[in-house]
Amino acid sequence: MSEHDTSPAATRALATRALDGVRVLDLSRVLAGPWATQMLGDLGADIIKIEKPGAGDDTRGWGPPWLKDGEGSDTRESAYFLCANRNKRSVTIDMASPQGQALIRRLAQTSDVVVENFKVGGLKRYGLDYESLSALNPRLIYCSITGFGQDGPEASRAGYDFMIQGMAGLMSVTGHPDTEPQKIGVALVDVLTGLHATIAILAALEARHRSGRGQYIDLALYDVAMASLANQALNYLVGGTAPRRLGNAHPNIVPYQAFETADGHLILAVGNDAQFARFCRLAGLAETAADPRFSTNAGRVAHREALVPLVAAALKTQTTAEWLAMLDTAGIPAGPINNVAQAFAEPQALARGLALALPHASGGLAPGVRSPLRLSDSPMDEASAPPLLGQHTDEVLGALLGLGEPERAALRAAGVI
Figure 1 (tube, rainbow, N blue to C red):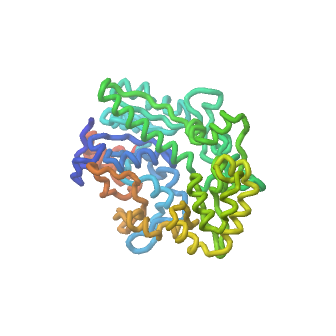
Figure 2 (cartoon, rainbow, N blue to C red):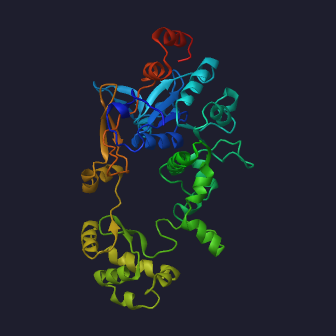
Figure 3 (cartoon, rainbow, N blue to C red):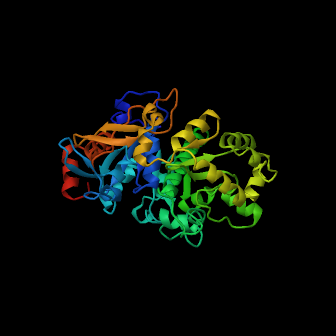
């Protein structure tokens, strides 16, 4: 493991953070790669984010909305960038220049992990591919995130979350059956790919404890999207029929969907036969509970067209709040359909401290969402705000590579940093 005494993780003196001592060289941008490195940073790794001078990560400009500084003015730091880049140090290096490539190679020699999401072969021309860097640092773990992986007929294509949702079948099972296919409201394939990258990197670090060697990780958005079809993939592979869009209904469980109430909507998520019987008693549907068509989940799925209108009519008789109170008391899973503002205002969200306010280098506070990872002996309570572009260039190049001020000034004059 490499040392990084000048990093935010070290200066906070949290010696028990799970990944203290691990350094990650982050060559990725946009969402999937940065999501992975943010999670590693949450766990205590020192994340050095390499960005293009003057421009930086594409998402820095994906606004509005923009972060406000201490005076209430726009910083031009987008909310999108903020969502995936806390706990990182930003270093600006021109990767296209030979001098910049040399700097990145030197940083890779002091790192445990490299994460990149360039097109297949895109970094080989710079001498920054796995083969080149692992020759300098055999313990290096190198994670490449692409749209379609390193081989196959689509390998050379760029991959974007939206198009991958369509190609992998996610959109075919999302949305109402009478409307066009819908994408998920968040770039969830990117997020899930980031999670899978994190898992793979942690596994490779553990494997290195035994072998002493690093390794290459080939991670594709398309593969992740296909794997994330979960029960819908197996519904097809076992049943032989492609799943169809059911709106808010579930292909394997009934009743398990959104329903209208007297003043809005709620989600009813009956997960077993006992819960269904209790719901029927609560909703005045005793005859329905006794009907042999509906007594088992398999029967309810087979006869959903007959059952769902009965449930819908019953739920329209009272308000959402009245139903939620009764259903909770009866131990029947149900919940409201919140907008994002309402979700953050939920008592549970407040109690768990899910909204962050991190001091930012601009003088203001950078909002964020707390990591869902909670480790009893490896606290993650002191996150650092996403960095300004190039905020840590001098710090990192000075401390890790030993470049003095005259050398850095010369590199800056040449546009390398």
